Length: 202
Image 1 (cartoon, rainbow, N blue to C red):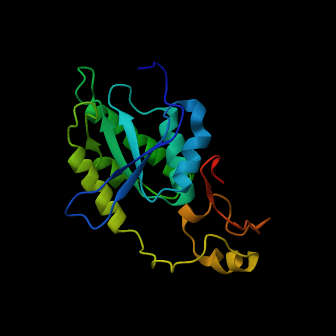
Image 2 (tube, one colour; image 1 turned 45 degrees about the horizontal axis):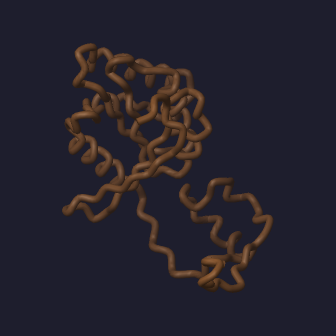
C-alpha cells in the first residue's frame, strides 16, 4: 500500500436485486489540490454524495463541492464518515454543515437551501461498512426524483456537425464535457478495423 492522497477519479458500480437501476459511483480525490477533477466529475453526475469527516468537520473542499453542485444543479446527499473513531462528533459536524449551507444560500452563492438534506445526512463508517445500506437508499430516492430521459435509438458511433446540432437540445451532462452550444470542430470517421496476428489490433 502507498501513503498519500488519491490522485485520480475511480469508478465502481452497485446494483441490488430489487433495484431497477444500476448506480455507478465516481470517487474523486478529496485533497484541496484537485478541485478541477471534482468539478468535472460533478458535471457528469446525476447525484452528488458529499462525504464529511466527523473527526475533522467541514472543510474548504466541502464548500467548493457545494458550489459545483449548485452550478450544475445536481441533487445532494450528505454522508458523515468515520463515526467509528473515538474523536467522532456527529451532531457537531451536522451543525457545522448546516451553518455552512445556510451561509452559502444567504450570501447568494448557491441557489439551493440544503438544510433538509443536512438533517437527513447519514452517519457511516466506510471502514466497517456501517449504515451503507441507508446511504444507498438515500441515493436511490434522489435518483427517483430526477426526470427520466427517453432511451436514445441506436446510431452509428459518429455524427455529422448537423446531427450534433440537432441533438444539442438533449441536456444531459454525461453527453457533453463542454457547452452544448459549442460547434463541433471536426468529425471523426472510422474507416476500417482489422485484426492482425503479428501486430495486434489496428
